Image (tube, rainbow over all chains, first blue to last red; front, side, top):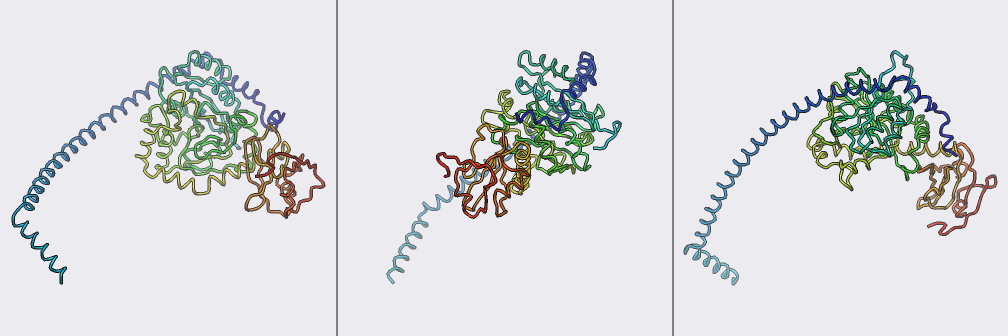
Length: 118
Length: 390
């Protein structure tokens, strides 16, 4: 098998694993040390993470409040503009319905027809 | 590397685990077999409170057998915070480098040595990502990775084959991938930890490496540091990513917001020609080295398909609209070869460095037309099949 040939030229893995096992020492103590060390690291970092998360919540809450205020201000401004627009549309409609506008409109149409006859 | 034992860099190799009874044991056995002639490697398994019944107990026993350290978090932290435990342990423990790795990887024997060598070649390097069949946009393509590559001896062989090609090259990339990434601890001190905002994980290493870049550090990949990476499956099973997705969109949006130019930098890299050149060099090296070491057959005029179980390499000579082309195929890797010489077969033999075991002729016309080849001195077999060419 070619697969067996792949071993050629590389260090024997079993020997390396045995060496690592020997170097690491007795497993029970190692496990207890690792666990207590990592528990302490994990707890310390978890507390920092909570602090960071809290700071982010406070910051985001402030931003949310600011954004909401901006939204309210924009909505108010939009309402004012909508009212103004409605007023302007009503004025425009009144203008179109006036007697003067209709006479002027008729005048321009007659003028256009006469120009066409020339 | 040339370090004396007291100057040898200390490396913490942290493997993050969340379930995965099929992939984790081979991964740990692989890591336990690292060659550490030139650096002192400690391996730490960080089990993120795997919920699979009995899995953590089995893992603890395996770690003890292999002589690697094991820690199970009391509750699930998510990938970024689990990775942070490894980074913190490395910094507090006085290590020079920390490698963060997934648990569905088979590492080449000298991958740590190689990563450290590249890391130490330039003070401005902030991270070095290993190379693999499955490493996002930097992947080295293989037709059947899960069939050919989950074999420790073959992974070691690939690494040894491509090392002379790339040496200690550090290729600058847009973002690091934490399937196997080496970081000097002095960089961790400056850049900080992974951001827990990425929740259960994905994109946290993109954010971290881009943060390191903003502080002036290079984000690099070492093509000589090869590892097989299965990838994907366990994340879907754990609910980390949705079925049919390869990322977490919410986390990508965070990266988009923080680094608006990142996507265009990725596009620029993809169109730079660097990834193709890198891939072609490696594929050519692997396939030719495979052909040289284990023999090869030449097929003329046959479509490249599956390798039909052959353990030999295969060089396929075909004709396309531009003329003759040749492809070398070895265990799922395929590379296009040069055919500049007048005599095609002689030019192939010169590239491989040995003669083929057999030349299989599916279409004799291909070598007749101006290929200048005489086949008298080789073993030639005429094959009949349908269709001979398309």
